[in-house]
Length: 390
Image 1 (cartoon, rainbow, N blue to C red):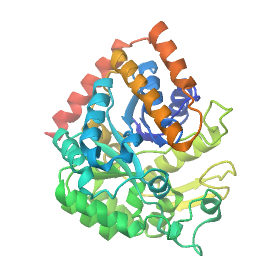
Image 2: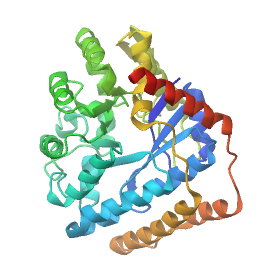
Image 3: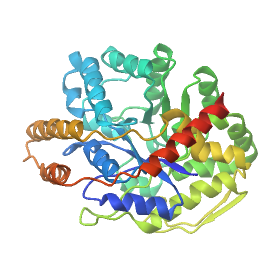
Image 4: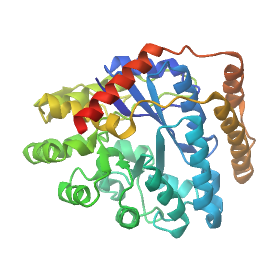
């Protein structure tokens, strides 16, 4: 069984397109990771709606409330209140995109080791609620001479006006020293695929820290160059690595489907890198991974280790998907309308809550099909994995 722990979704994507993407990549289940947004505030309601309609195949990691960053004095306590509301809605964890440098510019986010975050991280540690945390980007994005052209075109060159990657690593080191039992999956291998010693030290120091293998292509290129070291590293830390593809919609707002070629490339790359000794993937100009063909060394892991990465590590951490509470989701939808209006005032634009109104109409007039057999399957699968863990 394959669980894709890292999929992006927002409306007006059709929620059925997520299920089609899972089928294309041979994944049984997927996790929708919600991001904050300057106009929409958050994708959390979108993701919870898709989960509600998906007949049991989706998890959701909700985002934090970006409007709270405008008052650092109450930030920690307000974030805790927000997460409690999301738990009532049925989220399975929290997604933080806040460590991506452009988001540190987009919102007035304090340093992560600032005291204003303490109450939030203490709550997450106590609840053992998992966080998928995007911190930094590939190190070459801070170097104008080394940044790839595709990243430069996307606006991901980070000059001195952006947060420095070394400074953000320092901030997260301080967070983990204060809250050593946090359940964190650092996205994209924590952008340390070229520094496995540092990542290994992090794993040795903090038993609940994990990473996912969602591309950036530099991740696979770096590991491929030193495949023997990479294979030994992954075997040693086989319980700390999680499968994810970072599937996202690359097309314009007019389209409602995922880019099929990009979806297939991501699934093939991530799965074959784990299971085969050689990986060849045709490039595509419309894929964020680039138009160049990929010819890489793979990890060629044994079946039991591959299964941990493809499914078991995420399942042990998160369990079966939590049920969405429609009444609580409707309450969160109303709070989200207020956030959109708040950000519209900040940015001096007209608020657009049309998508939320569409979700609200559907929730009030339709009911999803609940497949009891799927829930029974999840319960039995999770019991087996817990039994093996003991």
